[in-house]
Image (cartoon, rainbow, N blue to C red; front, side):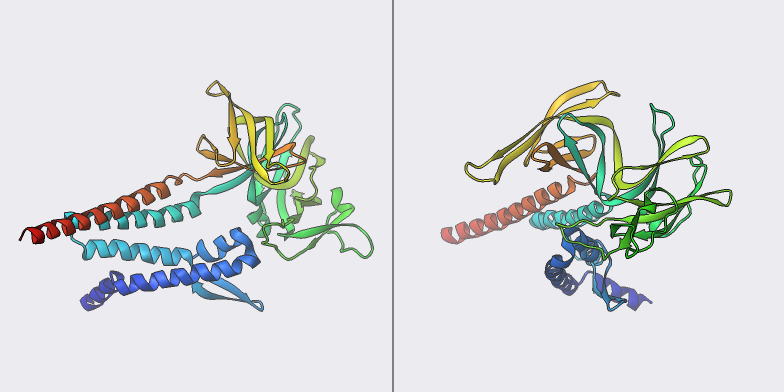
Length: 384
């Protein structure tokens, strides 16, 4: 047992393991770069880097093909920490090496935390429009809204992962049970005709429109159109099966238990205790071309809880950081009448900056130590 522990320890702190992990990391980056034409950036991150094992579908058989970013990064992190704990003895001559390795460790930890914590949203604002929420780039939700009170909407949101798993959902706010009879991550909507696929809906817009499943796309210039057939039941009886889809736009309205309900499949929303109002959007171009030179949004930020109201400006490379969120000027549409802001929540965003500062300081210190030693030795030899 003791020999096994010693062998395991020597393997963990081995320089050969470090080199092997770095080589595997380079292969991982190269393979992921080639695969980017098929999956896009988001798909590549999920398949190759933010996973322990890369899985590949070979004619319907899903098999592991390569260690993922989490596995390689985790092993490299253990290797660095183990090597420092066992082999390195702290002396002032190795201060730079210690700082450099500490920076590398922070980079690995920062990437892990970003993968676990970072959330990306988009905020679209027309001129004069006010919003207190942003919409997710990658995730959707089934929104069931009690709209009986004209002054207040009581919203229940069901994540799409529960729809995909056909989980029956019942909450105290809903007098009925919700279950997805079918869920399509990507689909097309077609008007009901004899040649069109039959709709599973028994009420609502699904009586006129049907959803047909399509292969999921990962291309950056293409978007998936999720759809689902959702059945509402109460006391064992069906209220109806609705077709919901992000492509339908407006919510479907129905009456039940003396109340008015809205039902829709939409991008997941992140509500905040403040509002943003688009006052002005400017789009400057290089003279004689349509190439953007600069585009920016001037907004009014209002937070009633802190009695705060001020005008802010977000432009290219000049984001707004507020309430744990970062707002970037991402784009525009609708003939420059709509501003698109990317909203990012990443509690660990400062870690890479600290890590790079440590690595830079470590390299400079180590270079300075060696340079000082070299100059001292040269001076001694010259005076001899």
